[in-house]
Length: 369
Image (cartoon, rainbow, N blue to C red; front, top):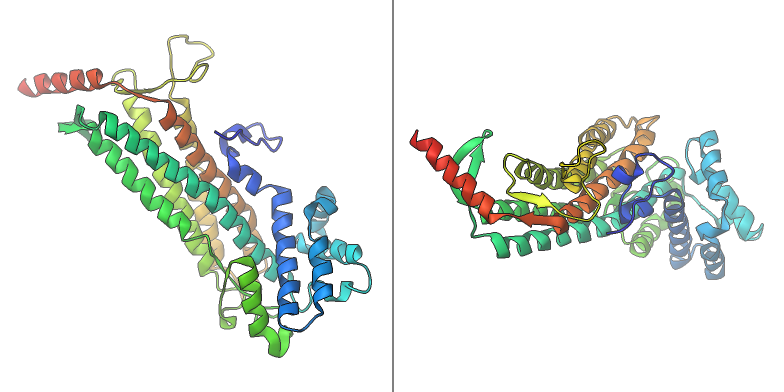
């Protein structure tokens, strides 16, 4: 498993775990914005609006290592987004001859939304890998223990005889659906709209520039009629990542329940993991518990994104757009953490078919009475 990234956060081990934590770091977000600026300049050169050497000079400067990340992020508060100080720094880097071509005809939302699509895609690649790994773990566990008879449980009570394979199949199907939903967010739609959102600032070259911009970034370009305030791509993203968190939470909850002392049909086993500060006899399924804890953050973040999606007034939202950023960033991280923790839980999982058989026998005896 990838190590946690604490971000100097006392609880980072829980909700900033795995590769998505790095993919959503401050430097990662700024690099995505710089990637968008480089793609914009390249697209304008592709369309013949600026010289190719000018675009190349801009691209050469678009590396986050050349910027003071902390200073850029601090100065973001002055104008309400990080693109403003980032563009100022980029113009200074390229010099006065090239500076007029930096961010030409664009507005901050063009760059932030494009950067968001890049960060989502990069995060989706990691989470997709994690979900597929979890599916593989469930298939492995099912292949080994799937025929083990056990009692099914409905509404918290013993129901009828079943097999552990029915459990792992449900896990696998839910995680597979989640992986498909995450994959669908890898190409978010963005709008190259300029200050008014309708693309008019780019003049007659808009469509060509937008096409080249999309090709260079690997994003989809939305219609100019939608402008910057039609947020269905953000709403779709929220639903997909919320679904992935829910799929991870469902498996984790089953593990927690089946690992209870009175049931004991599964357990997590790993040296040094799952202990208690005061009760030496306890062996907590801590990876599943942590997966649940991370996933439980997701519904509120999904709600924030859906609420914000319907609050983008006129040509640019005053607040709703800004509210998306931390909610989206955190949703990426908590979902990524939940999936990463779930992988750990499944790697550690030990199945006890004898305990399953004993519980099934006990259920039959209770039914006879």
